[in-house]
Length: 274
Image (cartoon, rainbow, N blue to C red; front, side, top):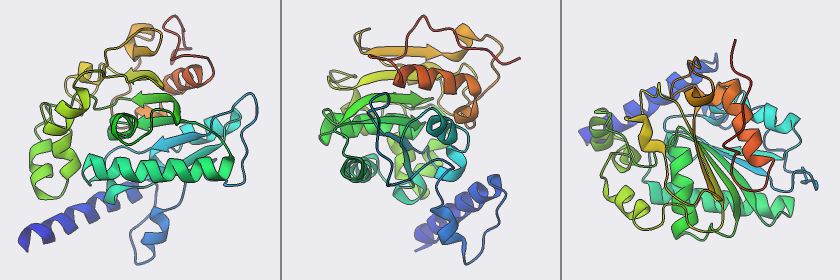
């Protein structure tokens, strides 16, 4: 009983923190606030055009709300001409990864049904960059995803010590994201980039959550995978893990990946900050 009470308290605290990041306060009406999409997202009448044939599904990181997580990138993608969709899942993304991936599968089906698109592009942050790989590999997503772009994804887990206490109290997905977890062993066994999507990984040397930052990187054939370290092209880029989706340089890499055949162009030179 004490464990369940602690879990409820910590999830509520995470939600309150997320609301505060959006300039909102927690109240009895906050449940509806949690489902507010970011600007530019969830126009269910949107139909992809020939220049942007895949709708884009945005997948949150752990403890994130879609309105805050995608406050910058969602409107940028919409302005670029994409149909954009976002959702909250897994009790603030704390549910086990397989359950979260099943929610993603169902959301993708809803997007495909509404838009008439055969495939979607997925752009995910942190857990949201890694978890879709489970959907692709084990839940039938390989032929439904054209591009998978992971922003600071936890592809090989983290050595961050907070994953353990969080995981054993209220956040099973945190345990799944530890280096060496059974989930990650299963996910990364064999082919890390199964045929179907093109994969782009975008990470930062300043990542303080996915430790070490190189844990984000994947192995696979160059024609279907690009690993991007922000500071390789923009050495002074200061962005860390939490706010990486708001980095204008990240946005350029995302648009590059989505706008061409194959993953992001390794030769692409973004406009650096400052």
